[in-house]
Length: 122
Image (cartoon, rainbow, N blue to C red; front, side, top):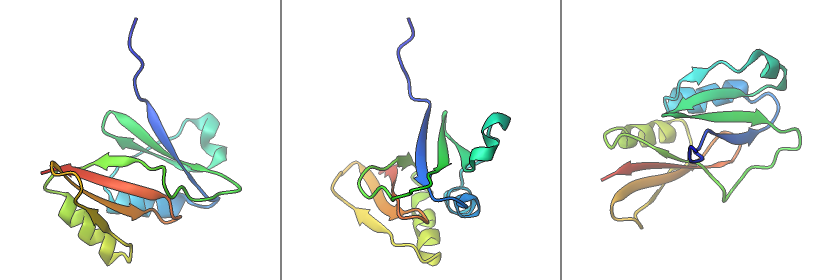
């Protein structure tokens, strides 16, 4: 029997989020967009690859941002500073957290206020 494994993470966003999702996750974070199955296209949202897994941005009509629950996206150690700079240049807040000695990590928010963590090894 195969052990359970992680398939995807869904982040909720308000209706009409697709352009901002592409800008933030595709443009700023560099994730590759993947096509949604035809049967799910009408629901809105955007899907991205995230290593061996997927990140789904899904539409929620009564959207409320997740301020505590969040994905932690692992980056190449050489990429985290450039991404942090791009986030700040885009007007987003970047909060570095130095509490784990073996990691460089920061917190920001996506365009809808969901908490996002970016992590890289030291």
